[in-house]
Length: 57
Length: 158
Image (cartoon, rainbow over all chains, first blue to last red; front, side, top):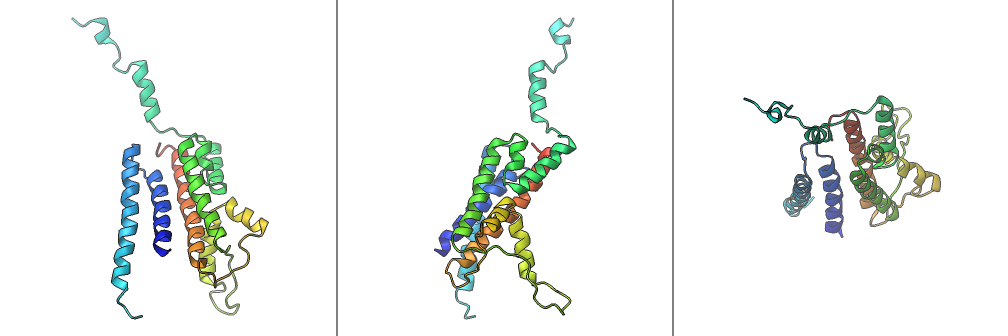
């Protein structure tokens, strides 16, 4: 549930940020930017969860 | 000796048209203002006004979808509430910030309020925090979309 919500959040953000990116001229560049943003959100989310998991508080 | 073709202006009518299509266009102030207001009221409305149909549809479905998803899973509409009337910070800061973020959704917020959706908070619901996050996300991203519509209308980008 939490991962699905995180992925949905990342997808919505990535789509909008890619569409308004002023540097990306072509659709391919926008798609790449969106994929990078999506991957970055998920990757950082998973990394933070792994770091925070052992903490007792 | 140069031929007549070689003496002709290197920018032919076809390439001039292509160049004009490539160059960002500056819209009049009235259209710029209308685009910004439309973009805030309806996500994607500003882009629709400026003829960016693909992006308009994308923003509409993504942002309205995010807001409606939030509302449908126990989300709540925020409004600044008074925390302590005697203190320097009169209002509860978190409700001020969250209501600012949600109001970015424009008519999504207003219509939901008018129809009575999201007026009662149910913090005990498992999806309460997720729901608020999606509604806040929709509003904040719509502020970026409004700025994007203004940039297009003022000729800063295509």
